[in-house]
Image (tube, rainbow, N blue to C red; front, side):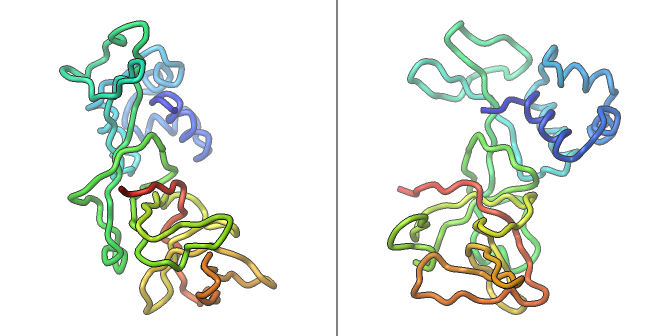
Length: 217
């Protein structure tokens, strides 16, 4: 599971940023960023959330969780830069993403929601959860995403053939499909063979790439 320092290193690498450029985006000194990258200083949760906002990752919210043996609970009290509570306890950064409805995808994506779900995944861009609403991705064998499952969608990843994507064709409702390429054409393929594979029309938008699939009970 990534911590804040690992997240910053990955963000710096994936966006091809120098330490100076990263510092400019975060609105702080190059030396301060250096301490974070080396892990010699640990920011408070308030500072992490402030810096996530500066990076444009408005869907993210960092929380500290204490994981001790088989018990998982939210750490009470002050979330400042303090050491772990015991030798067995580890501090992790976790993130909450909004659970959106399919109707929310008709226009600009909302930045928040009444319902959130927590995970350890740190996205390349903003991210959100969606509940699968039909059986178009329910395959008889192999990869399958049945109705009722929740998918985590990362808006910062490129839509590449083979990935599951949320696509919005001009004048049509968004759909969850597997992006495939046939004869140089991009196609939207359902995992359920009873549904048709369709061509990506001119103006087709990819709202994000599916990175996690969770069951809803």
